[in-house]
Length: 176
Image 1 (spheres, rainbow, N blue to C red):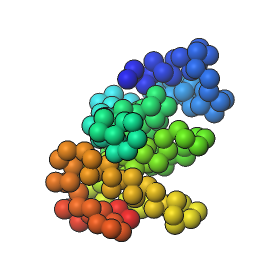
Image 2 (cartoon, rainbow, N blue to C red):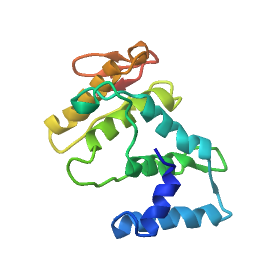
Image 3 (tube, rainbow, N blue to C red):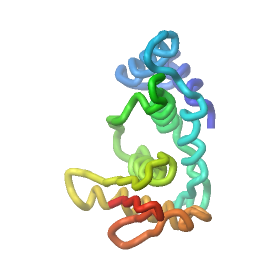
């Protein structure tokens, strides 16, 4: 996997096709890096979720059992979202992300890995993660994918308890 900013540079150079919104997000990120303001970019924090995702294991298809390396677009989303922090309290700059991509681009696994990340890595006493969609069966896809990622990744079941309708963390956290 290449560094997310290498991917971003290739998008801006036109080597990788991307919509105008992606290009604008990359340009905003680059411009914000040059500013002296209330936020700073933490490279270690930016890479932490990418490295976490890379330790998860695929559970079906031709990649079953192999490490889940985030796609370039996924890595860039994680990099920017988790890398920016407020100087005043070191909390994340962004609390929400709207990610729109076409079918068959790994959205479900990306969301499932994110849910697991928030359950384990946010250092919250009792994290609450909710899988929400316009229909229950669609929300269930992310919960089911999270369950299977946990089961297929060695050692992860020691940290999260998988049930039929939810996933629990020993700290009292819950995903449903």
